[in-house]
Image (cartoon, rainbow, N blue to C red; front, side):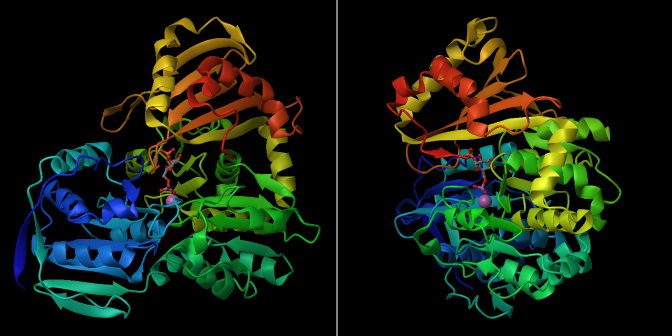
Length: 543
Ligand code: VG1
Ligand code: CO
């Protein structure tokens, strides 16, 4: 296998964000752009000679090309084996499981998740470490530092490998194993949940719809929901992964999963609806005429997880990202287990899961998961919901009403202001940060401000500190407004405003979310002058 060493010059924009490096496809198509990043990953690691690397992606445009580049670079850099999903497909949770199950050194997950795909849209590369989870900050910082000094990369001269047939090939000394991307993952799901009970529920007339959004979960959902659980063909909508996701954003929210939402709100709606995102790690849950906010979903899953075989022993702890509502905190309190509040992004959960401190984790952005892998997992969340429904034999709406009657309700919404000029977004955040000290004690439409800070997190397992993770404005009645800038976008900046109000048991638990939050939405404007800085009078997306 002839290896070429190619001279290169650094790109100055390869800093990984919340979840890997995400850029426009055109950016990735610059000469040496993907190669520089992949070599920088390898240069930041030690001890992988002869070891295994897992590679796969969500099937978006450029997936196949970058997989061939990764194979040739892995061979030239001394990996012993690469395991690749057939057709280049691996959902993010399935990649995490495969890394763990195969004892791999790490993996490269090719995805820009919920971002749109296609020649004019987005692509991404994320490195996951041997526990199956996203590289922690110290690793992504090292990768970024290397991208700024890199002067060469190594790549094999070999021709492309056939990644469409299951089997093993050789590239020099390195084995390339093409595997079924679904089977191992589906078996893991079957080991965690009571498939017989869910099957019986479906056979008994329970109806459901699952929207794969033309993204990676299609083959997984068809195997698990239709084949193994016996749901009728057609239960899985948009089940073929397309390189451009059929021109949609594979983002499972009320804007982009509108088709599913409308179906669940119709008179003849099925009992249960769900969707997942581009790379299969997020989930949207909608009961018949009953939308479940992701933060509430996390709380309900945590409160009821013991009803599924994989979690009968109970939870060791619950972890949520800081902007996620406090609904899960009340469940943790009742269960008598610790609750951890981390910065946004799954990479902060890995240490807690590895240390056995948390069993279930979640984010307000529709990501929930457990210690079965080290990524959030869309299909896992759907199956846990189905398992709970099969045991409790109640509707989603009834389960939600019961949950709120037990714990009180955290009214919650996220307002996204997209495509803001970066300097304006930075100026807004800087202005907010500069007045944090003077806010406590002042009053606005939201009430009296009790505290205001910039969230910082100290990892309880290794003491590492992450600062500037979002500005929190906390009111005396427990309500809060949180501001942060997205770390996954590829165009300008996105301001995320997270709004939460808690109403205890005995209060009005049946309000419309918009009404419940109106005073706090006004307060967010007053404190941050969003319209003044951005020129936008309303958010582009509300979830
Ligand atoms: C967003 C979400 C965050 C999630 C991240 C990656 O990040 O808010 O909760 O972990 O996407 O998810 P940001 O920085 O844009 O707010 V995924 O499914 O896009 O890999
Ligand atoms: Co995702």
